[in-house]
Image 1 (tube, rainbow, N blue to C red):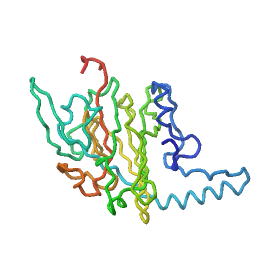
Image 2: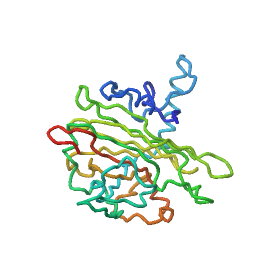
Image 3: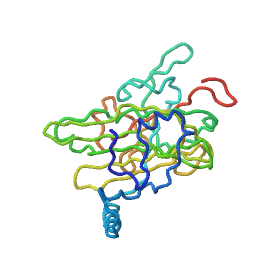
Image 4: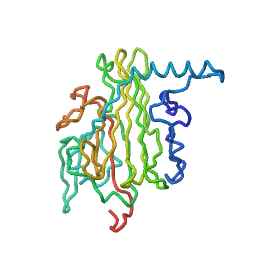
Length: 286
């Protein structure tokens, strides 16, 4: 899906097909519009009344939005998995190969900000981020489906290679829509994988826009990863992450259930992975 209903005024976020077509983040231009600026009214004229009306509508919409910290869970031991681009559905079976043997790993999730620190080895080379799907991925049957959000959008604030230091581009990476009708139906983006280059000056930030069922305000959840040990920030490491869709989803350690459908609906998350890509400066190929 490429159409978005929360874009900033002026220059909008990059669409997935535009981002992938560029081939290199060095070609991107920093987005200078405010991240949460209200959308200009569709078809607005250039007279004096139109800007005022658009600003008033934007103010009303802005008041109905909750801005919250993004709760990020990290799957303990997932840094030992060899290939994170293709995972079993809902993380049902995860295996680690070590010393010629294959072992099944657990599914214990920790708050990402509780990890000791990010991995400085990720600086100096390409890092692949993959947005897989929802966790759990299947829309439940019956009344339980009505508890799922109506819409989800994941934007990635991507660090740029070119100066000035600290500049980023906004990439509209993944989206989900629950479609109206008698039968549960939905439309979601396919898995998307892309490469970025984290450094000490540009934060990798994620923004989740969640439209809950009718009657609840839209949520904007944001987190900026750290390669160090900044208090309260998720750590940037190789591994598997779950991005919670509400406040505090993964603020405490938890074991994922054997049957994802048995998990509480408030644990619904977006599943993403981070892993180094290719050669690293000062190290051998991983």
